[in-house]
Image 1 (cartoon, rainbow, N blue to C red):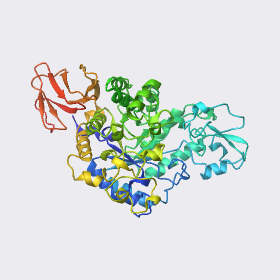
Image 2: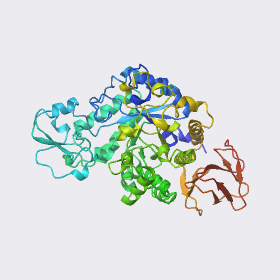
Image 3: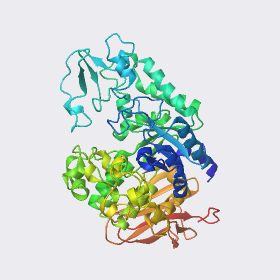
Length: 556
């Protein structure tokens, strides 16, 4: 195995870390996190082992959707810093070996964006057709709204001109019309601007909505995916290995189209929402079956394409691809209180409190996530086991200030609590019990576990590049899988149930001259002449076993 082969497609063996600058570290003590504060915490990310930093929106905003309602695509929110501060962050991150990507939110703007203000001045405005308008009364679209607790239509009447504008999300976020070539040119300029300042790519927000031209002049853009290929090509020309990580919560077959099919010339990466949701169903049932079916149902993609794996992200933990009965199973197991649920389709909780704080289950789930084929993605605070603040409600329940110390405001800021972007978590997951400073000193902490997990993950390129195979074994609660690439192979075992199990393995092409070396703990397991071994697993146990061939030169 040539590790150098992984250098060009760096994202296939990366570890991503998502954060909101506003809630990460406040350095000037005005109550809001900022770029200078983030720079001071980059070494925490380096020590953790992540390789790519994903920034949630840092642009000027009307603050109606936590930064996703942008008023200037070329600006930096002055509360967070300046362009100079951002460039200093990128430069310092690159110096530490970290790549940096940022949210690209071009499906819509804020209704306070100068483009929309000009668009709504009159029907003859030069920016009028930068947005999607209709003069006739729209039909009932209440079944199409993304936020059913806030909206009852995807069209909103503009009193000034008497016409309706399209908004797939909140009415304060009018949709841009990408069938307009001027809009597409502007998006290319936005991509070019930020890559010129050093960004290594983008996480693209709401990609299916961006490419949905219904309601617009679709004949102006007959093939939206052709345009997405143009965006990818433009990014490739402007960067050395820049990525487009797409938010595409669709069935696998449709996700394949957003990759560019087997050509792999559209989105570089996509989140695997299907497997994430199946993971929670498997955890609720203590049955690996749903997750196994999801993983084996992934379509064949280009070698240049990659899945991003996760168990928690910055939005609600959506369960929309489960059936209603399956969703209710997950609700009953992990969010029985209606205050823990949102939109009748998701949860606003973090993993540790959902699992009752059981460290065995928490570590097993993260071991599972990191062992799956794809690129693991962490949401800030996961590395220390942060909880949610349910009283905040909505998606903001998991976007609370980072907990650095046990001190005031969790060490996030020395400002008064009322000035913070949101309340610090209270109760058993508050900073007096869960924080970075204490866990840095504890070799048995979750933070120390994450460090080891990430270190081992980076040493196993077969997990990002290899062929995935579910191994037959008799225990319903156990997922046993093999990832192999070139001359490297790794077996991962995860017990989703509380009862111990002995897992019989039979590895093709192996014999008594091979052995299995544990990567997360010390130890080896011998194989017989038929490549078989019985491997014990504790309740909620997990093991990473490298297949060691005779004469291997890989370090264990």
